[in-house]
Length: 273
Image (cartoon, rainbow, N blue to C red; front, side, top):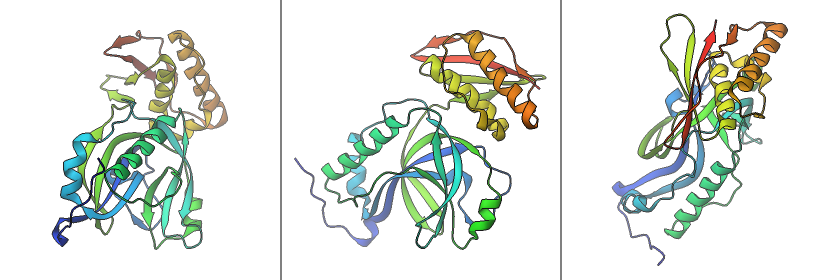
C-alpha cells in the first residue's frame, strides 16, 4: 500500500536530502569561496526538500541498503561550476577507479523507495559530483589551483540542511574504508581491504594516491590476481612517476600474504620511503 504523507506542523518539517560523504586527500589550500567543511563534503544522491521528518523517520527501517560493503574509489578530475548558466557551486567532477554502477543502482533504489513512500521527487539525471564551495568565488582562481583529489565513499547519510553550509546527519549507513594506515617504525604501512583481488589492487593504488595525489595520473586498471604481480605493477607505477617528476616512495615491499576473512580480502602493504 502506498504511504500517504500526513499533515505536518512547521516544527516537524526539515530540509532533507540523501548524500554520500566522501573521504579525500584534500589540498592543504583551496581557492577563495565559502568552503564546506571537509567532513561535510558529499555527493548528493536524492534531494527531498522541505518535508515531514517524523514521517520519514518511521519509514527508515525499510530503507534499501547498498549492495557493496567497501567505499567505491575515484579521483576528483577537474573543478566544475554549477549550474553552468549562473554558477553558484564549486564541485569536483568524479572519475572512478572502479565500476560505479552499484552506486547508481543504490541511488535509483533510494529514489524508487522514496516515491513508494509518497514523496514527489524532481526528475533529473544523477551526475555524481562533490560539492566543495559556494559563491562568491572566482572561477579562474579555482582553475589555476587544481590538483587531483583521490577520494572514496565513506558513509551514506540522510542529511538535514541547516543553512549557511551546515548539515546534520539524521541517519547513516557506514561503509568499510578501502584502506587504513598502520603504525610502522620506519616505512609506511597500510591494511588494504577489498571484496576481490582485482579490487585489492585498485585500493592499494588508492592508498598510495592519498599520500601522493600526483601519482593518480599513473593509475592502472586491475589485470592480475597474483600478489607478486600486483606488487610489481605498483612498483612500475612508482618508477614511472619518479622518472617523470619525482616520487616520495622507493618501492612497495614484497611482503605479506592476502588473507580472506568474512568475505573480505586484506593485505598489509609496506612502502619503502
